[in-house]
Amino acid sequence: FKTTRQIDTYLADTVNSLEHMRGRNGLLADIIWIESAENGSFHVQTLNANTSPTNIAVDLLVQDELISYPQYRDQALKNISRALSTLENLDYHHDTGLIFSRYATDSTSAVKDSSVSAIDNLHFAIALYTVHHDFAGTLVGEQAGRLFERMNFSVYYDQNSGLIGGNLIYQNGKWIREAYEFANLGSEARSLYSAGWALGLFKDYQKNYQSNADFLPKAFAALGAEILHSKDGDILKLWDGSAFQMYFPKMFISEELYSPKLNKMYHALANYMIAE
Image (cartoon, rainbow, N blue to C red; front, top):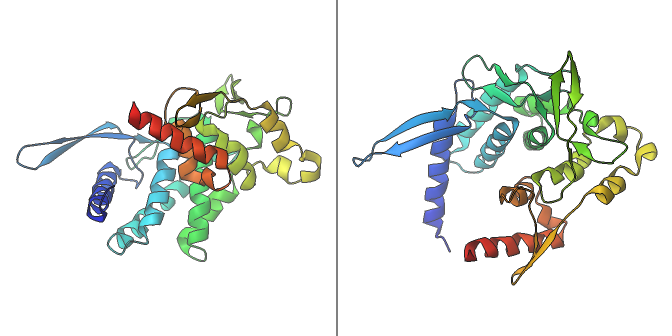
C-alpha cells in the first residue's frame, strides 16, 4: 500500500505535468515528453500539441477535484475559468451542439480534425454537467451549463439496430454518420447507453419518452459481450485489449455503484494484469 506522502507526491507530480501540457488557450496538449537531466533539471517537448474532447473533460474533472485541496484551489479555479472561456468560443458542430475531435492548444484554437466523436463528446458532457452542478450559481457554472444544454446526441442513434454510432464526418457536402456502431460492452463506449440516456442527451427521443420507452431495452438487447474466465473471476473481454476500455467508464460514471457484476470484473482484471 502507498503511504499518504507517496500519494501526495504522485498528485503533485501529476498536477505539475498537467500544467506543462496546458497550452496558450488553457486547454491540454495531448502528449508531451519530459526528459530529466542528472542535475535535476528537465526538458519538455510537445509531441502532439492538439487536444480532444476527452482530454478537455479529464482536465475539467481533475481541476474540479483539486478545488477541495487548499494548495491547488486558486490555480484550479483559474484553469476551469480559462478553459470554459476558450470552450465558449470554439468552432463547433452547430446541428448537434457538439465539439470537434481535435483543436489546437495555441491562441488560435483552430479545428484540427472536424469529425465529431460520440464517446469523446460524452466524456465532455459528463465534465460539463459536473462543473455546472458543483459551481451552481457562479459564472463558470453558468458557462458549463450553456455548453451542456446545447448538446444533442440523437443523430448517433440507429432506430433499426438500437445501437449508437461512433462518429460524424463531413463528406460530399453534407454531414453523415459513419457506418460503425458501438455493439460491444467491452468498450469505453458502453457509457453512451447508460450515462448518455441518464443525462438526457438523446433529446429527440427523450422529449417523448412514452414513444421511445424501448430505447434502452432495445440497445442492451443488441449489445454483445464475451466473458473470459480466470482464477480471479470472470473478465469482460475488451474489444482492443486495452485496459482503459474497462476502467474509463469506472472513472467517469462509477459503474461499480450500480453494477456488482462489473465491479467484480474490475478486480478480476486488475489481479490478472498484476499477476501477468
